[in-house]
Structures are given as structure tokens and as C-alpha cells.
Length: 316
Length: 316
Image (cartoon, each protein chain N blue to C red):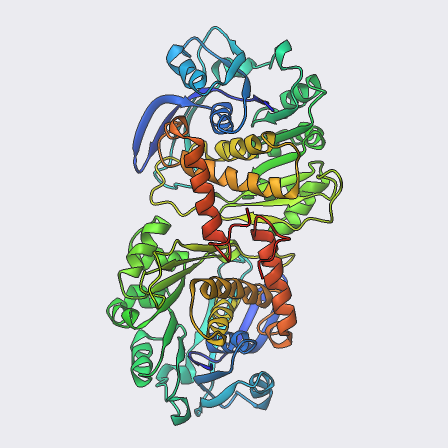
């Protein structure tokens, strides 16, 4: 089933130890949509400016991504410039021009009203809640957020968290949101804030999923956490978009499956790791544009082999 | 088969956010020996001073650890004081008194000359090499080192590395030793320095094993790396000795098995993670003194469940 994603479509200028790119296609909704498109149809709700041309549009079209919900506004698209020269794990932001994104008020096309799977990328939690409420027939809602909303817009964030089934954040955000430094206690605290599952991303060390007992229907026995390491990579060219690509692989796989079981959830975390690992191998969305499901599944199998005790034993 | 470990037996004073302990039993050889003792007989080569009494000795005796190689010297035992108040992942050293350890010249008892499994804990690489050469019948040698030897005694270290089958170090040490910031390239570089396998420990994020093709006999196909996350823990009371406990669980399990296969190696990494996770739950060696193989195997099973795609599927 298709996923609707609401978030940013942007231009990024990126400097990393491997080189630089000027004004390449970026934004959370872009990375998410491209990654998820290998698993399921994707619909985008976002706003761009007049600098978004047929060249950028063709990247989405090539992956059959539905742009009915892409609003064209007068002015320029969201622009971000960052560098990773000091720290490949965390960008230093050099410039952020919100441009048309400053007045972003997501408009849901009628054709999207049957949305069952909704991804709320990292935007103002007030907008996340508005979109969530405009789509009452969703069966599964995943969302992201960031330090800025946690620190400065906590009340609005606390209102939308109970509307999310799965929250995806990183270690620092989990600590900030919970006020707990211990990872396990931080996760438990976040689960009391509303989401029925939490995925904490550890960058090059992978991700851990934590579950509320009521995530799966019918209710299962209490679920242990699930930890997936990331793949060891020869070279990380550009970490931009890794987290959104993780979310796209994760949610795309879930939306492609008939029901959400613990086994599907675990495989979805693996697919998230796989899509994140592809993204960072090239600048921007370059790698995400050129994949095939065969490539993706081969890397999924590699991740299974490097994490499982009996790598040659495939239960399927 | 039994393991001989050479390293420090010491007293530690430790301050962590959870509290403090004065002069508790510590040292790399102590943690290693206690952890390994749940899998296989262990023999210790170390030196202690007159402050090492029957109380400390009884900790080893209770685990049937062979102290024939424990030299008693006049003076005081190695003493270390550290605190983890700022950073639970890395101690700030407040005091190091080498005492009798300053003149440590490992003496191998005749009864140890049939040693097949040797663990060279973190000591001067000159001594590591001397011990290695005094035990020519070893079939598997594992070793540890630290920043100080990598930076200031590199030549001596480079002479002993080819004598190790498995080197266990952490991320920082792997980067220092290789001069590479990328984890995978760092690991490949370290493998060119001699060891036939490398385990890089990531603290709370687990560990990754890398292999030379000639580690296993008969030679196997090239082995992918193996990654084991660490267990999510409710509380980390005292991280001291986690790495040595990992090494003890890892090598203890290997020594207990008839042959070293890829599957045994992977399970050994899991047992390493398990023993490290027990150690940090209490101060010093408190937890390591009170375990049973049933506790250990239950936690091994838990680690399998939180890392495997099909947790209820046990291939055994």
C-alpha cells in the first residue's frame, strides 16, 4: 500500500572529506520517498519554489513517486548548506534559508485522503499534528523530529507523539526527549510519551527498536528490543539523508507487507539500515536514484550474514 | 582446554555515578580469568604484593583458577584509581601506582608449559612477546593492547602482533594503530600488521570481528565481518573490566570447543558481549564472582533474540 510523506524537498550544498556538491536535490521527504519507492508507491506532500525544475521533478518521476501534493510557490526552495569536515557523523550547518518552507502549510490532495501509511518527516510538530488529523483513516503513522522541536517546541511535540505509532530519532534526541542518559531507560520513558514503538538510530553503529506491548495486533507477548548493527562501509562519502533513507526503507517495507508482525518489523529495521548504507556511499541522492530491488535484497542478505550466528542457515 | 593469561592483578578505587569502591580487586588478568573460568580452566601469570591476602586469593580459588603462576613480591600490588563521573564510557585516571608491577617479569611455571591457549592481556609488548616465545606449543594466542603502547612503544608492539591470532582492541585504538578513520579500512590495515583476526569493541554498541582468510583451518571462503551489538542494560554501575571480561568470555568459550570454526568464533563474540554486560552491572568483579553457566547461557539466548530476524527460530 502507498505511503504519504510530508516534509521538506530542498536544495543542499554539502562539503565532506570526499568532496563537495552545490545545490543538489535534498530534503527529508526526498530521501524518504526515494528510499521507500523501492518497496511501495509513495505520495509526497511538500512545497518547492521556482528553482525546482523539470530536472529535479524527473528524479521523482523516474521512481514513480506521486507529486500531486507537491505545491509550487513563488520564491525559492528550502536551501541548506553544511559541512562534515570536522565530524563525519554530524554536519556543521553553514546556512539555512527556509524560503518557501517558512510558510509551509501542508495541503492534502483529495486523492491522498485514503492514506493508510503516513510518514511525518522532521517538520514543525504543529504541522505534523494537522496532517495527522487531516488523514483520519491511517492505519500506521511514523514520524521523525529533531533537537530544535524537542528543546523549543516541546508542548507541541508532546501533543503529536501519541498520534505516532513509530517514532524514529537518534541517540542524542532520545536523551534530550527523555532526560535520561541510559539508553534503555530513555527508550522506556519515550514510549510513555505516546508512540507505540521507538527506533533509536546510532549512526554507524546501527539502530535499536523498542516496543510497547500493544504495537502488534493481536497483542503479542512483550517484545524484547531489536538491535541491528549498520553495515561496515569502505567509504562514507556523504552522510546527508541517511536517517531519512533509513525511515524510507523501514516504512516502505512495512507498507509493502500485508500485516505488521514482529518479524516484519525486524526485517523493516534491516531494510532501513540497508537503505541508509546505500545513501551515504554517494553524494546527496545519487545512490538512491540508481538502485534495484535486487541490489537492496543482496545487501539485506549481507547484513543478515554479518549479524547472525549461523550465516549459512537461511530459515526461508 | 585451559587458558593461560598473563597480565595485571591489581587493586582499584572506582568512582561512578552509582557510587564508589575503595581498593577492590581488579586488574585485566583478574577480570579475564574470572570471566573465562565459567567456560574452561584458567591459569594466571601475574605479580602481586603483600597487600594481596587470603581474601583476594579466595576469589580466584572459588572459581578454581590456577594461581601457580602468581608471583608474590615484597611491596604493594598495582593500584589504579579512576572516576567515570564525566563519562561513563571512559574513565578519568586519578592515580596509577605500578608498585610491584613496575618490575614484572612474567615467570612461566613448568606446569604451564603445555599451554595451548594463551591470552596476553594489556602489558608491555616486550613482555607479551617474551611470554609468547616461552610457550611454543600454543595453538591460539589472543591479545590486548592500549593507546600507550600504540603511541610510545609501536616498534615493540609491531613485533608481537604477528604472534597473535586474535587482537582485541577498541575503536580508538584501531584508529590509532592503523592511522585510518574509517572502521573497515582501519580493520583491514590492522590485519596486515599480523593478527589473523581482529575484534574491535564499540563499548555500549557491541563489537565487530574481522578475519584473515587463513584464520580457520581448513581455510574457509573469505569471511564477512561479524557484528554483535551489546545488550541494552537498565543500569551501568561500573564499566571497569568490561573489555577484559569480554575477552574472557570470548576466549573461554573458544578454548572450551574442540575446533575453531566460523560458527564457534561468532558464538564466542556473543559470549564476550554477555560477560561484558554482566561485569558492568556491579562494581569491580562483584557480578563476575556470582554467575552460573545457566545465567550466562540465558543471557546469550537473550542476545540472540534481540539480534536475529526470527527470534523464535532456534536452529539447534
